Image (cartoon, rainbow, N blue to C red):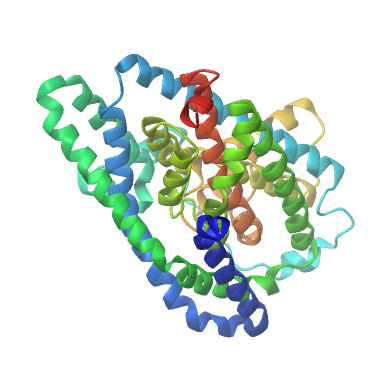
Length: 412
């Protein structure tokens, strides 16, 4: 009975997803009739994301025990994000070397049936950096499309509040109270998750099936194999590094709900509230969890990195470009790494990454449509890796910030 009580919500989520997926397979496009129900739930989640990110990041930094700890946390986050994304890129590249999804596939028929590609907007590197990290107007910060600039602003606000000392305490108290209230709102909204996610997933499955053909089917299957290897293999290894056998046990005990939410929504942003709750149950300190999770939703996407490798190899194979020289290998891995940082944290928000791939390697911007199909069919497993990867990264950051025995102290 205790087990059922602990996993009741996860079981309801699983039931909703299974029923939704079955409906999508049976009814196909007709399953779109339930999409509005799923969108109602997602919109409620999206509405709380902006205040949640703003309040949680600001309050976490404002409450940190001195600037030394903040610097250590941010430095460790960067090192962990960089290392895990690089490992994901290497694993994906090795996978495409062993099994190229376009080998022996007649691409002429696929290209003939591709949808018209959207026009690409040319931008310099400087303009891209400015648009990625800042917005021209204060009100533009408060949009789920500008989460990264919002995080930058929240970090600065938290820093300023901490530096203000006693005079900044009223602001810190407001941020703390706001965070508690918004987390309660998330808890209330999540009661509707089994129905909302089930309906959204039914529509997704109903529309996705017909698109998986020929080379795209091979790409999907390759990605699925790589995702399974990375999800169970790499994440278990990371959890072990973070906390030994106890770390592995704690991680897999609490990652079920975030995983199901990621699979159902295909949105890293929608998973932020669930991931925050899960990481805190894993024993991760509040200030680390509330910094890693929102920041990771925008800048740390191992799944998108792996998807970027497959997209680049797809185009390289299609046009017969060299993939074996050291410079080519470094370029492919490097660009895929950047794709993981610029992908949007909303469903199917990867056009920026696809435009980057075409621009860096000199492909016609119209080919964005070619690799957008890959983005669509791998969206679910990619989001699973993108989102849940941040929870285990929070454990890794805790290990290097708090010390070797951080987890045993939490569960002593």
